[in-house]
Image (cartoon, rainbow, N blue to C red):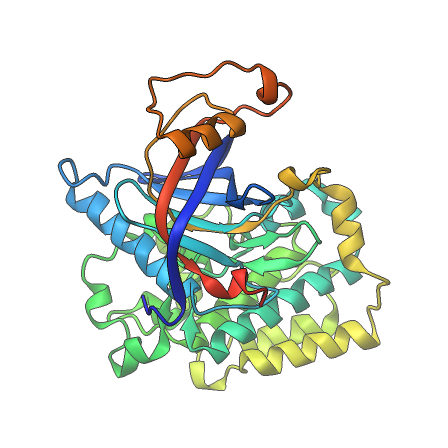
Length: 382
């Protein structure tokens, strides 16, 4: 990572007990990133497990490399509709990423939970905000490759944020080769986000591009107006792949605004990638539709009413977490870890929940790390 974008200094991170999500090699926790005693923010911390040098398998090595690649890409992106990177700590194992935390969870769960409570103007606002986030990413030549409602998060201010860059690539790196070497070792259809893939990405070689993201955005729109339900929920992968290759996409729900439905069917889901619109054209069209036909006082307020927003400063949520590594000191409180930081206590020195620790939320782990952190956030550019 370029030292022009990062400064190196000691950071202090501790994990709360909330597990946000988990996978084969990574888990994401709610935590706190402390710049100093008077400046702390709640974050999401992604930790890569099984990545110690003496126990690393080929799969865990790939997982670690994927996390580092994700952090590298995120370091370039600063936009209100894209999840923000706080920093990367990789001086020793395990590897972690610290990102902005979104208390509203992902858009898919939100849509499925609240269903009819969400009116069409608010759904159009979701479509508009996600389009603006993707327009920004495409302006940076980022091919997301995994755009879906599950990867759109809802911030504490009710904004939609594009997240999860684990599969993302820079368009120039894909070049005219399509996926090229990406085809080698590709997982079977059962293990990839098949329903969101463009027809050209289901062939060999796979032809990923900004235009394949456009197709995926059309599927995201389908999710938004279909209460978070994915297309072909019960069909086998081979049948789904055949339907996509032939352009036989599912019908939009009746409540979908006619201009959006027509635009997706005739333009976004064109079998010829070159005939699909750009993300800029899409963002402008949906923004105009929102302004002219589906005005809403402030859609973010409706979202905020549905999600639990932390009341104290120490509980407010930051968005995504990038790579951070550390020594675990379980069971300590914030005050205890500050003491450890000053006097270099070991994990065997347990401190009681008394005195200055009374009333403080107990943590599960604490980390003191030398890390690469995006200095622009520290400079107030966010």
